[in-house]
Image 1 (cartoon, rainbow, N blue to C red):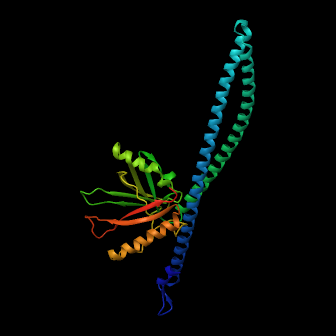
Image 2 (image 1 turned 135 degrees about the vertical axis):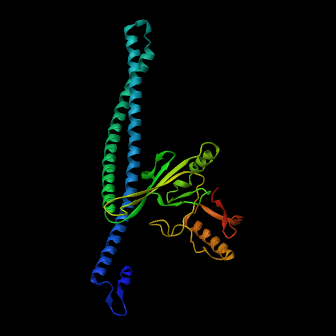
Image 3 (image 1 turned 30 degrees about the vertical axis):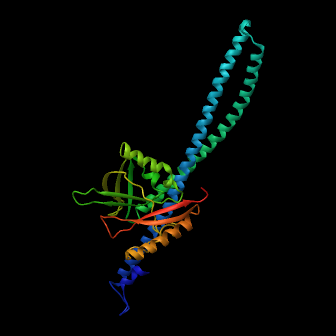
Amino acid sequence: MPELAGSIDLTTDSIEGGTAALRRQTEAWKENAKAQAYQDALSEIYAAQAEAELEREKNLVLVRNAEADLRDMETERNELIRQRQEMESDPSLYDAEKYQQMEQRLLELNNEYFDADVNLGKFQEALAESDRLLADAEQKTKEYDDALKNLARRTSMEVEFDGASITKSIRPYLLGLTYTDNEEGQADDLRLCLQDRGGLWRESWLAAMLEGAVKSRPLKIRAAIVRENWTGGGRDQRLDCGSFELDAAELSTPKGGSPMYRDFGLDQGFLDKPLPVAKVMLRMAVKEAIEDWEPRASLVGMDFAGDAADPASLCPVVTVEVLGE
């Protein structure tokens, strides 16, 4: 255990601070290991809860659509019955062909209504099951969250987007948050790092949203950093980072930065290398990443744009070809 090495004097084979110090180190290591295990399990539970919420929403849509179909059928059926009754009560309105068509349609509606009612029952059962699974997932999340609070200190983030809290919905994707409190005269900076294994953040809606924000009303992001159980006893400390305007979305993942997908991303070996060496290494890293993780695309070329404000930085411009188009 590397954490215990500092407690043992290898020259004298003695324990610095006595066995009590070693015992405290051991207990601290156990608590940290336990906290990490809970944290890993909690990440999986949050993902399961998000999946349960999505399944519930799908079933809720099916139930509402089925209920709307039944209401439409009832409205049409009542109107046909009214017209039939008018014909039957006033012989001058009777039309044999139209009467027969209404009878046929009423028969079809009865059959359609029966099928739709059966489907509605199935959808309602599925919705009830989704509610049960979601309640179980929420309870399990709460239990793990409470247990983790009592184990060790940790930090979490609260995020609002355009006035609405997205802390819960963004949690399965959030890898980290960076807040920079710049000196007076410079704007503070807030960056959210999100995993995108499912391609959610590469869709056109994000670019359209950013373009719309530039042309019309800026989109606001508010964030807070919460230091949980920081002084023990489950007491939290909250740092409000303030409000920021969403101005850019960057697609960049360092290799090793995505949990459970450690090979995904860009090899960062080019960092701190001389610029000529870094350019070659970065080209190779980009080429390998595209070949390994995006078989639908092929690297066409890669150039570097200059940055007058920071001549020592690299600003790569990558051109790819979408295969089959």
